[in-house]
Length: 459
Ligand SMILES: Cc1ncc(COP(=O)(O)O)c(C=O)c1O
Image (cartoon, rainbow, N blue to C red; front, side, top):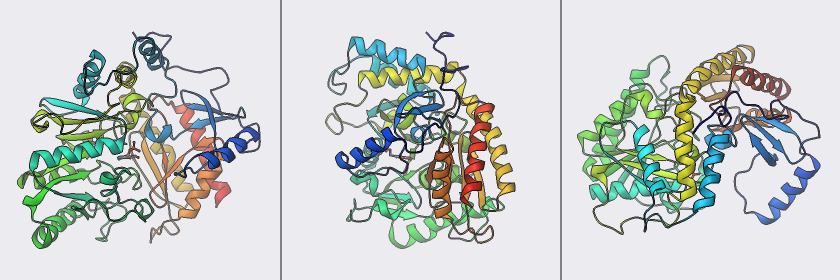
């Protein structure tokens, strides 16, 4: 049961409630670990030399005793805050009972309870079924197979700027940075990319904030009049794979009508729409799922990241009509593992009891207001965008041409860290500001002050 003691708010761990930088950065212990990391770990995407030791709520202490305000949430994973007391309690209880019992071969109640809890919050008035995976890319791999199996079609359409993972199937859909794919061709055949209706920068030259309907029309016409008519017959297409809001592509929010119209276009040719909510899910956008802002109920939804607060887990939630028609078509070893299931059930309970989705919407409005004040102050901020606490600012060399200021953005990310604020970049020139959904106004003010200082020091 969630009690006053294991709630997240109000929450303050002694010594972990404000920024405290007491060594040079990185500190001596951090420097040692970073050096060993580069010796023993394969190169990935690390960008800042911050070495975490413990986390509580919005704050992370590093191995040198420096305390950072975490406005990165482990890339939108720790949405309930670090080490939420109730989720911790439920995981500990489960650790004492059983860890693993091959949930795709045998049965246990925790997996069913987790599936029921997740199906219960995913929108759509139809029976849903869940396949559990361990990550976002694996959820998309499953979704791709479900679409192929159901439609008996082989072709897919994805969007420029989209990110869906790095395993070989999902990588074929990913199109947010060429470096992700460089050296890894040929990719899975059968994926065609089309423009996403990015209101700020798009190939049609439309100001999508002023003329959202024109942008949606051009985007869909491109598919209908060019793609379908010239080289990809729609009745060969199994599915669209799309994010409600592009995450790694720069926090791009399409016009309000886009997803509904895309769904209509898809339905007209019996094409499925896979909604990748890996980054937008679990309250990040001020609703439980990003697609709810657009009035669509996806029949296939990919999930991961915040689903279990940091215990690895992913899921695909599908309309029951799309279930595989015989055993053996898909499975795995760890999906819906007992610890992950316990963490996921507890996460959803916390989100509901503590009204974190509502807090995300409310604090998102406040955060955006504070970021718009920064934009007033700095010509270098070309765009402030966001829904709920899925927020980003985009740096430009020139407000009129909107030329991305990538170097400046990288510098701001680094200087923020030196000011005790953890942020993550996204897209070519944006930086995301994504605190845990338990954040309050005081913590937002603290973060905006650190960001303001960082921008001042970078330009
Ligand atoms: C929208 C989206 N889909 C899929 C993925 C891949 O998730 P994972 O890194 O867990 O494989 C990500 C990761 O950032 C994502 O943002």
